Image (cartoon, rainbow, N blue to C red; front, side, top):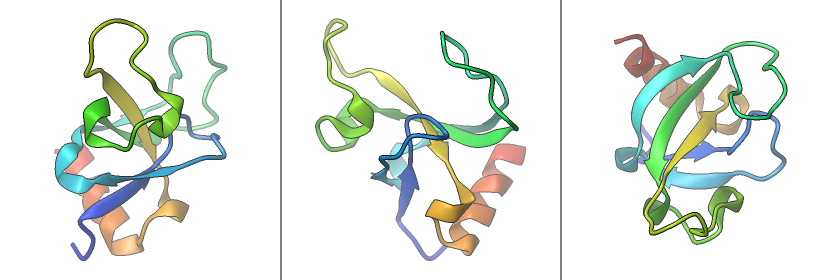
Length: 96
């Protein structure tokens, strides 16, 4: 892998993205249900989890208002946001 960072979004269609250290991400998986009160996803997306203290303050629109942090945040990882070799390696992680 050539990149030590990954670009991610809080929602698959969020206009804002942020750079996340690759080693801060865990639990790579595919998600095809939004959960919560969000509308249905149009397809399955590659996702992972990151602790909010591993990204810049306010990244993904998250602030620690809901109790003591850090909180685990879901990150959508889109093909168009990342180098193809990085994205392909992350897909392999999700398959295992």
